[in-house]
Image 1 (spheres, one colour):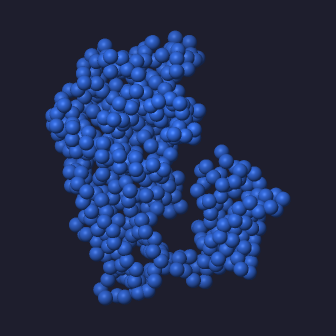
Image 2 (cartoon, helix red, strand yellow):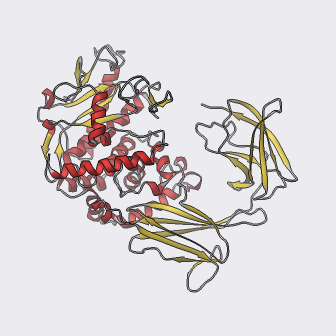
Image 3 (cartoon, rainbow, N blue to C red):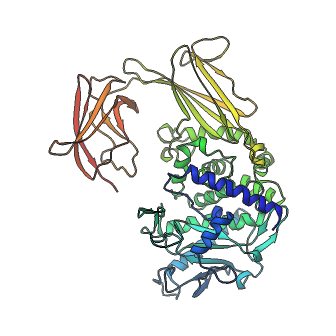
Length: 560
């Protein structure tokens, strides 16, 4: 095996270990099996869970079906653990699920190859017996039982793989044909078991045909990418970003990708886009969405064409913007605004077309301004984006004033070389002028000593509005599975930052839960907020008490 591919494996292994440490508490891990396949030890684990013939091909295929346009050959079992449903409502002799597999692979080919113009992975040099692209149906969703060894967590949507016979060239980037393995039903009952426990959670966010559609779009994009080459030293992040992007590019109605964006937005500093990592790629599909919404398919198509001409992937991304008379650095900086104005901060008809339903980014630091100054300095990694918030405490029931600083590390060269070079941001909010940047809305000043060659900063000032009291809790009913916070009304005469106690009672007025905190604000409403309530479905009575005031009401908890 050539030296470049060995180096790629070493990089992937190191980052795979880092990823597992970062994500040890996350429910969702790998969407597709690409990073597992590129890691030698994980590949062995994968090959124990997917049985193979002597030629290293999935041992599945009691029957096969060739798609309408003679492009795809789909292997499936009719009996056994991996067999799909054999229901055939149109009586054409082919199970409906296999009909759907064939249809959506043909659709993925039509859009990605015929319309966008990507290289086709078909014909595949006659590998596995024909020139068709080979697809294998397997139960990828379910993990094994506690007494089974070795542990197989399950939960994969799909895997795009190859054998030695598929390799076209090794130098300078490995290029190869491939085959795809997808799940046999994407059932809502497919579940993943946590290692060394009986705890299980659902394998798929979207299920059934919806999951099948997006998986085919994603995995076929990987098959296309392999025709351009496995870039060295970085490949996983952008490959996975483009894979997820094809899901909503072909099926805009999908919401599966939101789970990965939420993971990234909750801790952007842990997922710099310039560090090769599959989870980062899933989450930064939001950057691909930004690019596609603004510039269509040309940026990524030009990028992969450059990779096909032996240009490293991050350099190819940078050059693709240049080819299209754009600046990657400027677009990366604009992108920070797009991911800031989401959720409750969304502005109608601006930024992402579904901005209101996207999660909100969490701030690296939130600092309460205390005269004369408060400062923050931190090193950022290649292509990291994020935000720092400064709070100026409000008075007389007025919301806090805030200064939100959006930063973007535009060092794409370090990403290209996969070097860990930290570029510092450094901000000081002060009431002393001395030639600093005037923040006219806040009446304060900012000193920005960030590394200007790489760190691009944007400042967003917000003057707090007068808050109002309410007499209801929301959302009500409260679903802990989908709502992170519940907001309770403050007593009418309570003021912002007053100490308060929340008590939740059953209908017989027996206290079940108590929480201490302070009166805060949400959407101009004075509220007591909680993200710690863990009660069963039912109707409850709540009370919020301050030193001199109280309010009561009813709450319904309804898990779905």
